Image (cartoon, rainbow, N blue to C red; front, side, top):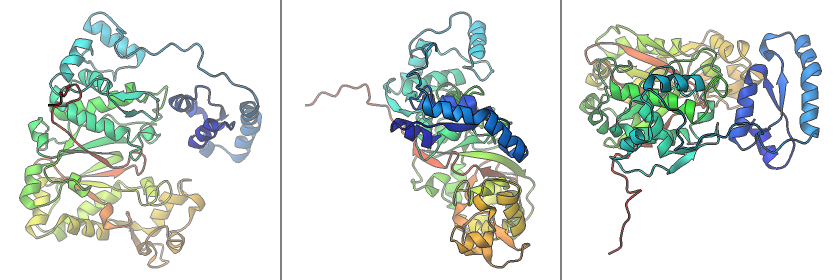
Length: 467
């Protein structure tokens, strides 16, 4: 719909074609860009799941007329009849905690679990220790057009059960969400990928984040409440609800924050995920990306890298399927799987002199699948790669590296990423268990974005008098 929005803003009439299930999202997208009455042409049914003759009949009977009307008839300038949105300080609900929880559920402002009512007093107490200006605008939510303010961050933080010391992490996450490179507008795509926040730096432990046993499980306040905050914030500020932008077919529950094991990383001399993105080892950094699926790689056996590497690589191939269209198709060289190693596995590599780059190179050589299977994922079994060309054809045109076309044998093994650098490796979890976790990321639909966390008290509200 970006093309339609650009055309409308330039004064050129347009009509956006959407499937039936995306009517609400289409209208919300237009509203988020200041176009309350963006014309839509509805495609009846799902275009991939109906015979061609049926699709053409639906197009002629329904869609064509909507296109004509949208291009020729004058439209209203606003969304008449819609209730005005409450302002930041309005009292929207009164009553007992139980009554407030029930009303929030009814209005779609809650994730369904009990929460603390975000009264003005609670929100102000939450903000007081660091002194941030509540009305500071961090950016615009591309899916709703709303201002992303420090106040809105704090309101949802109170609901999620965050502590005031978590505010710097939340502000960094909000900065990621408004960064165009991240692509927050894709947070409700149909495959239901969900964001994972990766936390690095000395402040993680000081703020109470768990990086040890159960690193990806709820139960630790910091990891859990900040993870819950993200889903609430996307719901209440970015409009990711089933009625608006959230079109996940199945969806995932929110992911708790993954804090890396800083002590283990320093001990073995490996860089953190944050350092992989150019930050220093003493910087507090939040890195975010969206992931479709993951799998545990349990009871990794072996005392040397050569023994454990094939099993880890197999885990990465097992979570990579249609996601490979982000190698070329939906994105170009934007597929970056994440491998989380328990500290004992990372130490095994380091004890034998392997750096993180050595592990990446090993994964690149072992995490491979037959070329024919790769081509099925990105072509025969999907319509997401234009032309459904073979890997050899893509390589000849310069779209993928030559390693994908070393022969014409359909059973030849090809990598799942274009280069070793595309693998990301984190270290966390129980230090005495030989397990790993592989996650398949969603390419540009929530691309890896890292922001420095500023834990210093803010000077926003301090009046400095020159001397």
